[in-house]
Amino acid sequence: MKIYFCGSIRGGRQDADLYMRIIEQLKSYGEVLTEHVGYVTLDEAAKLPEKEIHDRDCGWLMEADAVVAEVTQASLGVGYEIGRAVAMNKRILCLFRPDSGKSLSAMIRGAHDGKNIIVKDYVEKEVPGILKEFLIK
Image 1: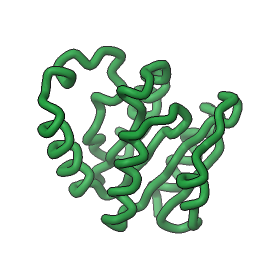
Image 2: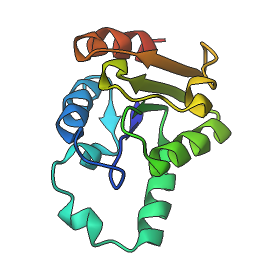
Image 3: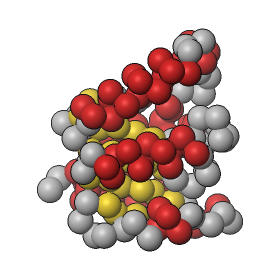
Image 4: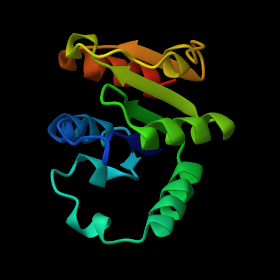
């Protein structure tokens, strides 16, 4: 299985450590195409031209069997990736931490259909069970 993980990059990197912990768990289900999202520093990726980043990431998104997005930190890029994944009929899991004090966009929460698009409020200790339920179907 190929998994595309989404997390905020330019919108804020305060959750990078959490992203990596989620990515490490995702690896037990298959190949994570976007492991770099969990890196604390993104020096090499930052050097790529923006068009190249866009085209590379859209290619990975097309390859992916499933998309997992941590959506607590607002990010235009993550929203764009989710929108593209919806258009590609991908299975999508959006993870949101309500204890962050933030509000999740109605465009994400309202997309939940219980089948192809799953939006879950969570605390970190629940991630293993949520991933298992989503990825083993």
